[in-house]
Amino acid sequence: MIITWIFNITNVFPPEKNLLNKPLLEERLTPGWFSVAVALAAGVAGALASIKQNRESLIGAVTALALVPAASAAGIAFLSKDPYKGFGELMLLSINVITIILAGAVILCFDDKASRR
Figure 1: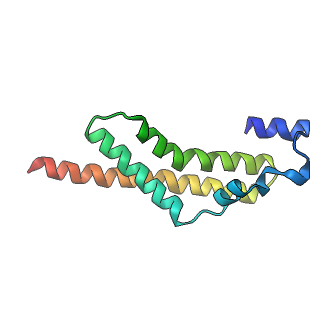
Figure 2 (figure 1 turned 180 degrees about the horizontal axis):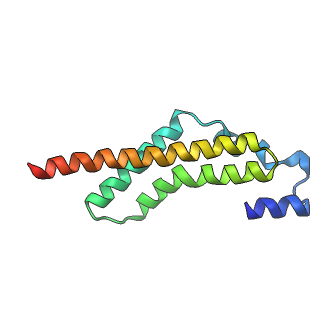
Figure 3 (figure 1 turned 90 degrees about the horizontal axis):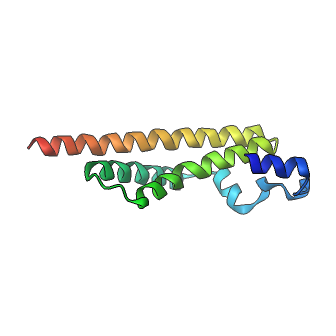
């Protein structure tokens, strides 16, 4: 958000080259089922890492794949004076967080049941 704000006030990017028009950001602003699948994978990976007490960097990367792009896109949208897209990205971020938590809880629940046998 800070970099986008600096670019906006210093006019590094002219208005016609707004960051919201870039293809990679546009993809984040129109999320689909792939976004939910990534969040599910992040939740499962995090839960499995907790179960196995394995703190590999892959787990952080999967989680970052689900959370960081949505948060960054929201910040860029708000600072580019497009609150509609910004709130959409915050909604995607919320969905990703909830999906990660639910997927992790389901995996941990199954592991708890398996360890009781």
